Image (cartoon, rainbow, N blue to C red; front, side):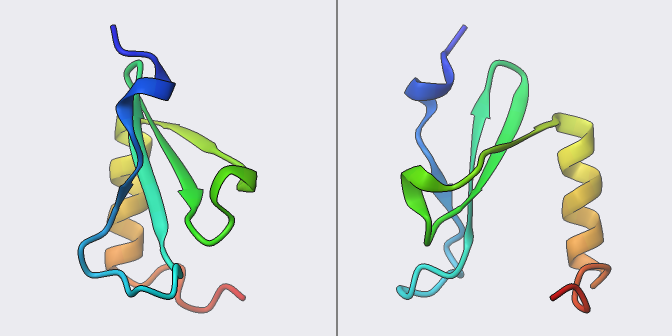
Length: 68
């Protein structure tokens, strides 16, 4: 099994160079998400794979567009 430190962070190909995006990595059956502009100081949110799929679907549907 790969440890979280070995998986590497993935940034969306559609993100800009300003660093305003979310990065993710796969870690031991979970998906971890962080804010790329904070880098190593960002909190890391750990979700189940199904939880991540639900979150991603909500983002695609605009469910979080009004969150400040």
